[in-house]
Length: 225
Image (tube, rainbow, N blue to C red; front, side):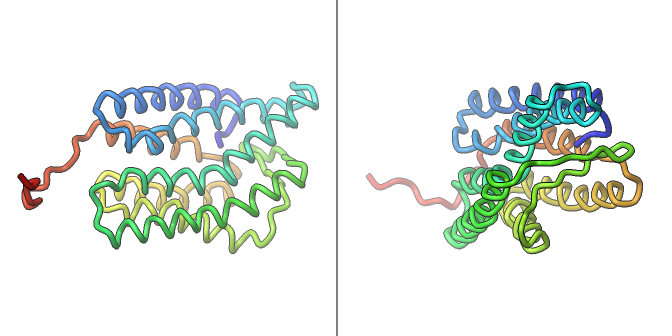
C-alpha cells in the first residue's frame, strides 16, 4: 500500500519492472527452483498497480464496478495468495538445505495453506470495503479471528525466510519483519501507508538473490563410478 494513487502507480511500475528482471535473472542463472520466489516482486508490483485503481475508486474517480473488482483483486493477493506463495517459494528454493530444515519449511507451507483457506473464504463470501483516511486506505474484508490469522500469516511468511538457511533470504526476512512493524506503527499512528517502500526494498533484495550462484559443497561425496 502506498500513500496515494500516484505513488502506487510510480512505485508499482518500478517494482513490476524489478520483478520481470528477477525472473529473467533466475532463468538465465539456471536456477529454476528460484522462479516461484523470484516472481514475488512481480506480484507485489501488480498489487500496487491494482491499489492505484482502489484509490481512484475511493476518491470517486472510478465507476463502481471496476472499483469493486480492484478491491477484490487487491484482497486476493494480499490475503490468501501471499501467505502461501512466500513459504512455497522458499521451500522450492531450498534444494541444498538439510532434511530437517526442508521438513520445517514444508510445515510452514502447510501453515500458509491453513491461513490462506479462511482468508480466501472471507474474500469470496464478503464484499471488500475500503475507506480513505488521510494518506492510507482502510480495508474491510470480514476476516474471522484476525489476530490468530495474522500470527499464522507472519509465521508462514517471515518465518520461512528466517529459517531458510540462505543468507540472502534471512536478510530479507529480517528486513520484512522489522519493516512490517515500522509500517504498521506509521499506519496506526500517522495515518500514512509506507508498505510500498518495504515492498520495493524487498524486491531489490530478491533481485540480487536471484543471480547469486549455488553454494559449493566441498564435502559432498563424489558420484559412484
